[in-house]
Length: 107
Length: 107
Length: 107
Length: 107
Image (cartoon, rainbow over all chains, first blue to last red; front, side):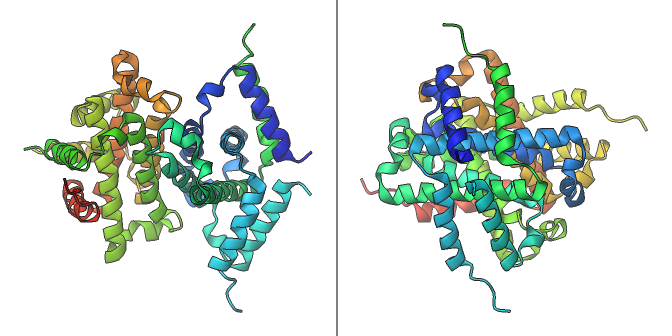
């Protein structure tokens, strides 16, 4: 099974088992998504570009990064599930638009 | 092929063809991720909870939502690719931790 | 008159004249504040630290920065007005806490 | 003295005493500003509009709101100080533009 489908189902079950559906409105979920994105930014905010590029060399920071990236993905999947958006297809469609907007420069 | 693997590769190629790698440092990518999350929030900020829940009923707004969700996903995949994070596995691991932190309430 | 008091009053009048009060709930206003902060981040996201430090040298970008900073301030004042927070006093109090949390290092 | 001038000076001194200037580049400061805005959003994300409107009734939450609002203001003042932006004037100028963009509706 595709990982997006698998994880969307697992998250839906996780939410239902805890009775969290009333909180998981689309408006609340997009807020939570932006908050998790900020928690990822927080790891990087005081780092030089060099330190930022080496952030995974420290095991504790690496684990922190993995957790925040996971939280962003969780809410992104929740948002898509609550709105009926096919996330992978949305990105394929967007990349076609982006390719028109930003054509490959001539050599 | 898994959609995450497919799209990560497509994004990497898209970036390389346009010579954008120098801009795609981890620090810049997490900033861009948070900016795209905010663009998704912007769609919902003045809506009542009821309007927010019906946001996909209007074709134009629905397309806008799909585009912003796609942009968030694109930068999330870029962040993970640049840092060597397995996004699906990171979320599986986080869900195990979350299940310990938030146990299912007794009936 | 203090600028914070002056601008809070001007913003309140601006909102009332346009009948926007129903939209200006605290929840919506904090969302709008975070969206405006992201629009400020967007100006800086692809810049090197050096380019970022010189962002005011270009008149057009300087004006863009001034506008986004103003938008953040406007929503911050709106949030405080809607919640009855004295913004200047809140920061004075926070600085006392921060001074305890981060003591001046011994020479 | 105007509160904005007073607090800008106090923050500059606070930063200097701790030797934090190297971290306080404009790029880092706008990131920190957006992170603090998200911490304010986090307080509101799971609340109903009614709960959000009553957020100051609980003393502990009220104090949390005051702290996050103060943090946003601190970084906004830091951003303006580092870029040479007159925050109050920037908002006055923006309100003139906004009044043109959004004229008062005819009665």
